[in-house]
Length: 61
Image (cartoon, rainbow, N blue to C red; front, side):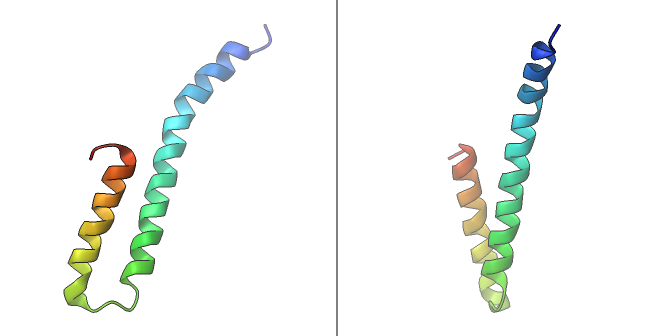
């Protein structure tokens, strides 16, 4: 056996995990960039907007 089936299963298992990690990392970086230097009264609105964008990217909107 050349290990092709094992590789396919590994890829099918890792691709969703990698996508989730990339999405989470991007969300954190966006929040950090958006919140830096922002007055506290505007932070909640920014976090809501970022959450909406993340939901849209993930396909829940």
